[in-house]
Length: 328
Image 1 (cartoon, one colour):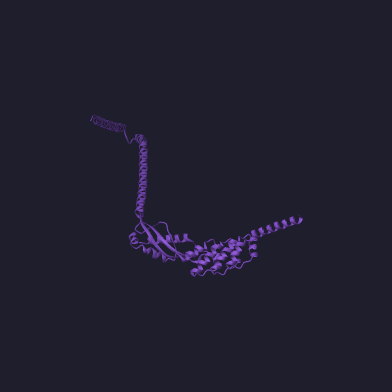
Image 2 (tube, rainbow, N blue to C red):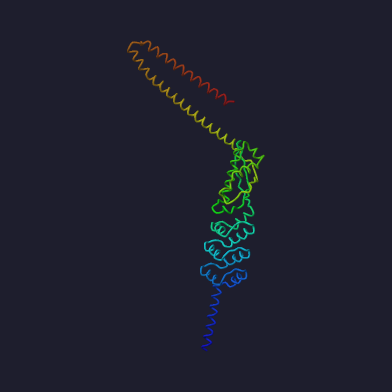
């Protein structure tokens, strides 16, 4: 009975050890690696588990690279994985570069991947150029006509400048700037419409891909539309502004004239206020007699009476005219 219990415990212990071993060592992955010619031991797989490295993320790319004829080591791939890189993307890029006859080693590919760029896409774009399209770019010729230009830029990746080089947005911005400059230097919008390929030639000659991760293959004008007459709009706005300035100056002159008139009226009133004083002084000094004074008063009274009669006649004529109009 005791032997049976001991034997059962030994069997259970062996089963647990086997289960733990199989959980720690992916035997199927190890067998696939050995069958593919990858030199790796079980202890290497155990070490990956202890370093919290998923063996399939290392072994499968290693099998792929070995079958492609690349000379890579497990330590290289594991170091790149621990650095936060995408091992599978790097291996795919190396295989694509080797098939395309490009000069790309593991150090370059891993550095590009760790820089945050898709190294496999970069190699693909280097082999097969990519076409990027700009938005509608507004440019104004010298005759004031706005042109809306859309361009297609064919680029391919420059592997040597991929690290630290500017991206697609910089290419698009530079192409847009070149189009605006070229159209702006044209004498008329008609010349641009007649020869749109001149824009491509001028922009290409500027070397817009310097400092970027791409090489511009061609710039093709996809569409040109006529927009607003910016020159006419500016002239209209200028004329409106000049009109407002003229109105402001006229209002200023009118205000000055009104102020001058009021000032002159004040001077007249002030002078009229001095007349009684002057008359009294003339009477005292004997320059003016009493009879002369009364004659002057009579003349003033006649003048006032004539004014009143004239105003009354005008008012009567106006009222009669209104009555006649109403009766009609």
